[in-house]
Structures are given as C-alpha cells and as structure tokens.
Image (cartoon, rainbow, N blue to C red; front, top):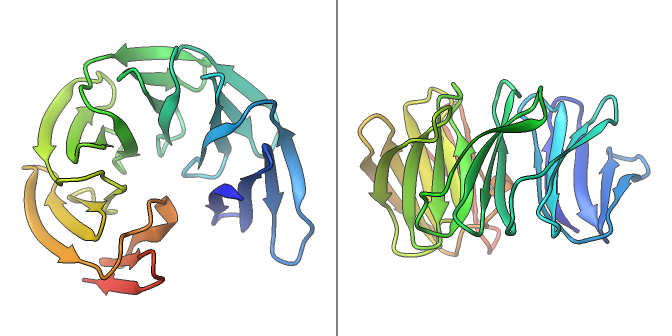
Length: 232
C-alpha cells in the first residue's frame, strides 16, 4: 500500500494498492475505484475533498471527482511528474516535473493555464498557501522557493537545509511555513523568508503529508521511529 490520503470530511481513506485506486471506511469492505495499466506515481486529495488527483508513468495527470466518479485527463508534461497540489478553492492544480517544468492547470476548463521551466533544482515537495496566492517548492538540494501562484513568477529563494526537503507546510494564519529535512524542523516567517526556529528530532521525519500537521498553533510531528512531537 502506498500514496495514502485521508478525507476528513467524509471519513474516507484512499490509497493505491497493486496499481488500483481504492477507498474504504472503518469496518467497511475496501472498494476499488480505478485500475491502472501503469504504476501510480502521485496521489493527492483536494482540500474540500471533492477531487482525487493522481499521476502515472505515462506523465499524465488524472482528476477524479469523488462524488460523480467522473475523470478528466491533463496532458502537457513530457517527463515524469514529481509533485502535485490542488488549490484550496479547488480551481487549479500545480504540478512539477523531472525536467524542471512547473505547470498551472485550470480545473474548470481542464487545460494548461501557464507554465515555467525556470526551476533549477529537482523538486520533491510542493504546497499551496491557505489564501491560494503563493506556493512553495522544496528540492533535493535543500532549497525552498516561493512563487506567485497565478503568474508562476519566482518571489524568493531560501537555502533552507543541507539535504533533501521532506515536507513543507503553511500555518493556517498564512504567516509562517514549516520545512523538514532528515531530523530537522524549521519554522519560517513567510513575509520576509527569515528563519525563526530550528528543532531536532531523534530520528528522520517521515516524508509524507500525514507526518506533520498544525492545529491550534501546535505543530505535530511523527518521525521514522514512531516518536511523536508537539511543538508550540
């Protein structure tokens, strides 16, 4: 099982198993939603739980409507797709590619809205701000880049870590963001891009979105040794 996503709205669990998209609830049999001919490389759920978006080795993006079960295909990348994110208003998709290409997709028209090929690093994680105005990418080289979401213009580059960035997360108030790399957690001021605090964990932090969360101004972290941290 991989690419697990949780729908907190309807208490659904989505995951990929044996090239199949599956759905289940607690104490209910697992339901297969899709079967794929090639390996799935990404799976994300939209903030309002309307869509599941996933990619396969054929370099296409698929958007699956959870309620209607309708599916749309987005084509434009010519190399493997590395990361995906859906805006909070569920109007756009951001995708990044192995050839350093970033594409902004329009969900309503099922088309490419804008693209840029100016990212010099290998992107491994992307996240979108709560107000949908900017997005942040993290790279294998430990760099963070802040982008304008509608124009895809680069706002700032931060040499944040010395190794692969595993997670990026905005705080709900849109004032700060958190980055993780191996066993380090760093808190940043979004407006100025300045480092505010660094924390260390006993083991490496798991490189999944479910391993880090912010709730009631408390940062929740899970590392590879199952150690749980609450940081205020």
